[in-house]
Structure formats: C-alpha cells, structure tokens
Length: 502
Ligand SMILES: [Zn+2]
Image (cartoon, rainbow, N blue to C red; front, side, top):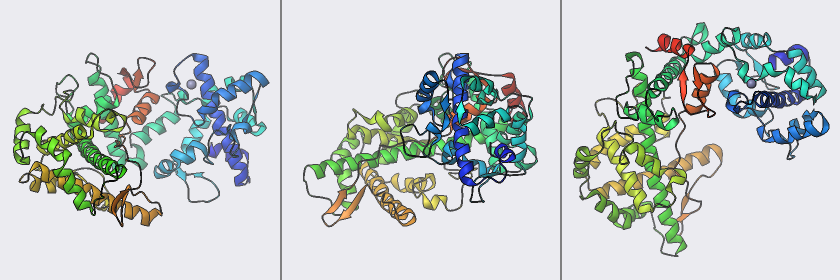
C-alpha cells in the first residue's frame, strides 16, 4: 500500500499520507467483509484479522441507507464513536510495524512516515501490484466514497486472494520459511521454519486420533511431554527433535511461571483480606512469607503432601504421579496448571490453589533433566536472565537447597522469592518507564496492598497466528467453520514437511 501510494501521489505530505492510509486501511476491511458475506464463508478465511471490524455494522447500514459509504466517517482521527481505529496508522501502527521493520520489509528510520525497503519491501509490493486492481482502489480512496459495486470489483484485495504459484506467494514462502539469500543465514528464520514444520507434524499426528483437536492446549501438552493426547508417543522426525526440545523448555518455563504467579496471587489475596479486616500489617516481606508458611496455607499444604519433608514429598511424587506423557490425567502438571490461570481460579479456595501450585512446582522438580543447561538452544539476549530473575536456571539452583528442606520452608522461600522479585522488578520498571506497577508497598505501618491482585496469565506461544499463516498459505485446510478445529495437511503442507523436517 505504501509503495503503491507513492507511485500515485508524488510529493504528498505526511498529513495526506495518513488520511489516505486510514481510508485505504478501512476500505480493505470492507472489501474482505463483503467477500466473506458474498461467499457465505467464515471470517477467518477472509477478513477476521482486519482493523476496525467493530464498525462493520455501521458501515453496512450506511451502504444500505445512503447507497454509499463515506470513508472519512470511519477513517477520521477525531475521537468519535465511528472512528475505526485510534492508532494513526491503524493495525500497522499498532501491531505490525515493528515486526515488519525487523524483517527488513519496512524502514521506520524516516520520521515523516513509514517507508518500504528496496531490498525486500519493494519486490513484495510489486508482486502484489500484479494481482490487484490498484488504480480502481486508489480512485475510490481519493474520492472517499465507496459503492457496493466497488467492493465487489476490488475483491482481489481480500486476504484470501493469496495463491500458490504467484510471485507474491513465493516471496512470502521465503519470508516465513527463512529461505532465499536474505533470510537463509538468520537463526531466527531457521527456528521459525522448523517450528512451522513441527506444527504441521502435530496437525498430521493429531488427525489420526479420534476426538483430538488441533488447538493450543493440545500443542502445549504435546510439546511439553512429547506425547499425543491418547498417550502414545509423538513420533517427531530427527530433524525436528531439537526444535521440540526448545518448545519443551518454553512450556516448562510457562508452568513454573504460572505456578509462582499463582502463589504470589494467593499471598496478595491473604494480605488484602487481613487489611480489610483491620488486622495488624506485616512489618516486612520476610514476616509475610513466614506467616504464609506457618499459617493456614502451610497447614493445608503439609497435610496434602502427607509429609513434612520436601525431599520425601518428591520421592513419593516420583512413584505416584502420572507419567510425563499422560498429560490428560487430572493430576498431571499440564492439567493442574490450567486451574491456576485467569477465570479458572474462581470458585476455588486459595488453600486449594496453593496446594495445586506447589504440586506443579514439585512435578517440575522431578521432571527436570539436570544434566543439561536449562535454556539450551533458546535464542536469548545475554542479560535476559538477569532482567527476569525467576527463571528455570535460578529455579534449579534453589531446588538443590529445597531437597533438604521442609515443605513449609520451601513454601516460605518461594513466597519470599516472589515478593522480593516483585519489588525489584517494579522498581526497575518505575525507573525505566516512570510507571508504578507495585501491587503492594512498604508503608509506615508495614506492607500495604495498593492494587488489585493480578490474575496469573500465560504467555502466548503464537499458536493461533502461526496456524493462520499455514492456513493462509494453503498448507493446512480447516474442515469446519472454526479456525482452530479439525484441520488436514494439504499437498502443499506435505511438500513443506518433506523439505523442512522429515
Ligand atoms: Zn476473501
């Protein structure tokens, strides 16, 4: 769009660019919606990810009543209810510009507006120009008025128009699979290619199992355990083993993070309750951590562990816990972790949540392979582990001490670790951004809650986005009306699996 605009509006200023960009951005959303409705197909095949979809009902009404859509009603930058997007450059400005610059497609160094790069952006822009009626598109944008027949005539702009065999497709294939002269040497591109191949393999393996759905939960379970939902081993080809192991590290990190966030949340809840009841505040985080371990949380936990010794608890767990591959078992860490996040906490007592979180931590402790470094093969910046002090490396270091400690001492140490880390990370954020993210503070009367308890959340493995890439590129074909339901691997997908990881 940026290149195509430049060809037609030479010498325009940035105000003109922004106005036309916003009209064009919303016009693309209208085209995709019209296309999906005309074919009576689900949105995820057409415009589900377009910017400003919340205005579609309004725009459709305008088209029916006035016979045309006035683009500026929606493209306006004024703060009115009909505005399609707040960000100046719409979805591009909000979500994509950083990634596209990182991929060397866009150049954000010039301040007036975003430019494409000559090396990679230009060829892709010219490839798109070959398959879409750009003159008609810009005529509509310049007039600011859209008729139904324009939307029909511009259907080639719908995202579904990506076709194998075109130059556009070839360039995108090189981009996503890290091929071609520019991308082939980049480690990030190599890992992306292998991860996409791994996803195709998982889709293929799940399609052979009754009732198995190709969704993010199956993805998390399989990458963590190396087993499919029916318990059988996931036969990952040798070339993708290392990639699966990196994802295992990701998911182990995730389970540790969720368990610790959960203990942190339960501790803050306890603090908030005491504050509400007007009880005496804890003078220090040490006193709070000690209370957690010796009070009701510690009592319930010790009873649930059936032993005061953490080492004994780990030994018992090693014998009694479901095997790592049995991840649909309710006592498996994959399932226990599901109880600890977001709305799943509702209706559960904090005592129960503490027991579950603690069990996840203990299960991680018995599954950990101490013979290899915790983040083997993961792309990290040098100081990442220092900036995020609670990580699998530091977790393992503490584990050695925990093995000789009591269950209550371990609970106390973890609680203190979370509280102290929160203070230091919030202090750093305050220094770097000027924004306070403290959930509690040390006041004159001791520790006081200053914000609502944050619900533990997961990070996203970008499963949905990657799946959408594979669907858009024709490597996966959804079987139903849902984006993330049953899928089949197509001939294109099979040829990629053969090339990138068989
Ligand atoms: Zn379409």
